[in-house]
Each structure stands twice: as structure tokens, then as C-alpha cells.
Image (cartoon, rainbow, N blue to C red; front, side):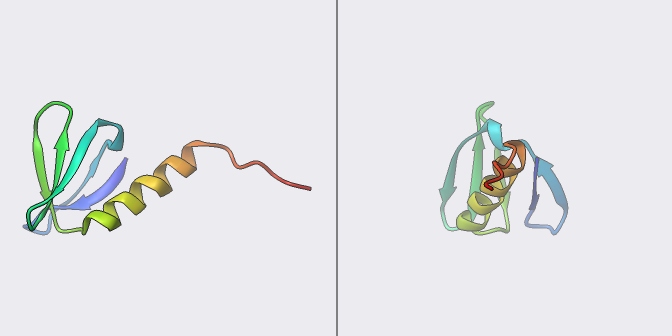
Length: 65
């Protein structure tokens, strides 16, 4: 789950695997597979960074010797 902030300042967590696309119009809008739309304060690049960080935590790191 990744933390995002609604326009009213309330923070919540969203499942990044359920995001179908991210629209910028001009607010960042997360369009979910269910058809729901979430408008968030974060820039699209910030949301993408959070998703990348989340997915890296899911995959065990390979230790090189």
C-alpha cells in the first residue's frame, strides 16, 4: 500500500496494483480498475516513485558478494 493525500489533507493508503492509470488534469487523479477516481495532492511523479519503492520492498534484494 502507498500513502497518498486527498485535497482536503486527509491521508490514506491505496493499493497500487489496482491503479489503472494516473491522469494529470491539472490535479493528479488515480483511476482505479473498479472505475473509482481519487484526486490526490501528490504530483504524478511522486506517486510513481512511491509505487516503485513499494514494489522494491516486495522483491527480496539480491546480495552480491
